Length: 270
Ligand SMILES: [Fe+2]
Image (cartoon, rainbow, N blue to C red; front, side, top):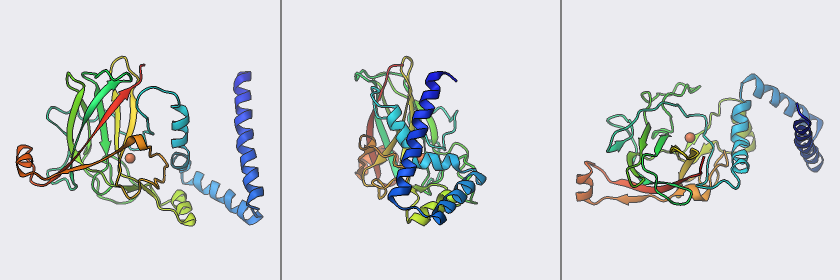
């Protein structure tokens, strides 16, 4: 370890320890509470939940600090439910889904640009999101829920010559983080809910540009102001428009109203 690394460890760890001591003093933490905190730390480790605990309470702050000053669109945490090599879609783009996939139809469109606004042809968007039950495909959930088929609501598609894309999917719903272990026990003990607002995950990439990890939210979501992972950013929040014109629906081959929204991804240079 270099002197610089040693200094960095000493600086950050001292700051963490000082903050904890300040909390103990400020809130007059008792011996019983100290013992309970130690037991809690042991339980988190035994359950293998330190990564979950860290990602729920701290990762979004790391993402904000780490991306400060970066050009292009606001970024987001990747989250634990990404799976690589999802199907490459063909136009017109429709996310892989079951014939009777429950949920409101969403037409998501937009542009991929460089940070200076130049549209990027053949940029790739890799998208994944939950189904109408808040479940992701391909994830070994600890409960015995019904899993969608592999790669359901996971797909990759590219922009056209004008940097534009349009894909049909369903609107995801808010979902609870795994709450069966010590992390969930802490939420209950503090009287907090376990929900993340609904979101689309996207990783957007193009040659010569750094890839961009996004989470896109919906402005009327009941959990938009109380995300348990504190990851919502206003610039990543979309508005939905409802469409119910019969001719429009017929042209799109839809038998029920749909919603639309759009977003412009701006990629930083590599
Ligand atoms: Fe997610």
